[in-house]
Length: 67
Image 1 (cartoon, rainbow, N blue to C red):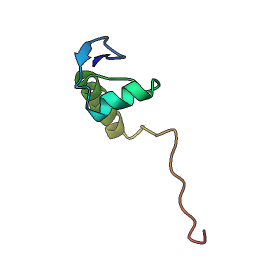
Image 2: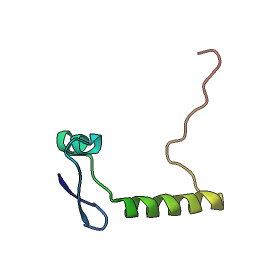
Image 3: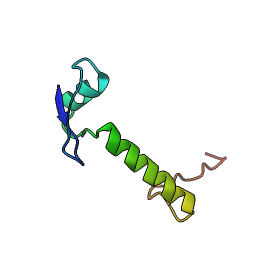
Image 4: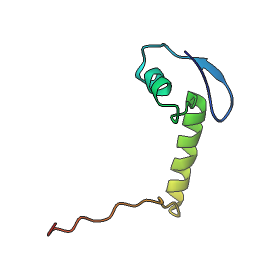
């Protein structure tokens, strides 16, 4: 299966029997990101977390012990 990275437009080839290929085939909303772009985003996110000013939009609420 040929796939295209959404960020850098690099075309890769995936084995048809991989779970990722099946996910991309059956659910068009899922997108593919190449390993280079994924590593770059991970690295930069970790850098922002290290600054201390990084906050997630959806933070988990604490569970009430009575619930």
